[in-house]
Image 1 (cartoon, rainbow, N blue to C red):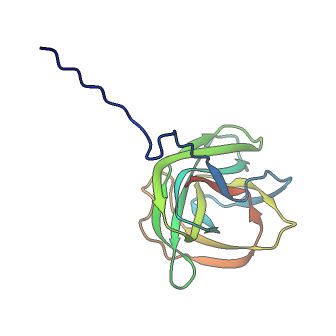
Image 2: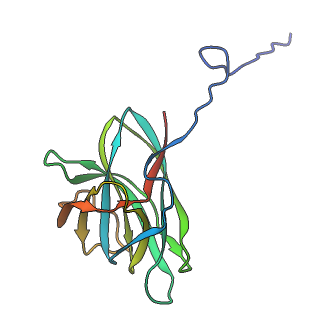
Length: 178
C-alpha cells in the first residue's frame, strides 16, 4: 500500500499576496547639502501613519572631509513622552563611504514591525559627513546625541544632548511594507 500526501501552500484568499514596499521620510536627493559632525547621532522625526514593517534605512550622503574612508550607520528610535528620541527600535551595521561623491546608501536591517506613531531616524559616522537636504521645505525637528562611536553598539536609550526644530529637511528615509 502506498500513501501519498500532497501539501499546498496558499494564501487565505487562494491567491498570492503581493506586498509593495514604500518609503517614509524625504526620499529625493536634493542639491542642497548639510554637514554633520563625527561621533554624533543625528536623528530626524518621521511620522508613521499605520502599523508597518521596517525593511531598510537610506540616505543620500558623502564623505565631508579628509581622504580616508568613512564608516557610517543608521538607526530608528521611538519618540519619548517629551517629544524627543528615546529607545532603539532597530539599527544597521556599519557601511563605508569610499568617495566624496554624493551617493544613495541603503542599510539593511532586521525586518521590524512597528505601530503607527512618531519615530526618529538617523545616522552616526566616524568622521564628518555631508547629507543631501531640501532647504526649500519647512524646517524639521532634529535631535543629537553626542560622543557615540560607530565602533560601539547602538545605545538602547538616548537622552538627546541637543534638539532643535530649525534644521534642514535631510534626505533620510525608511523603506517599509504593510
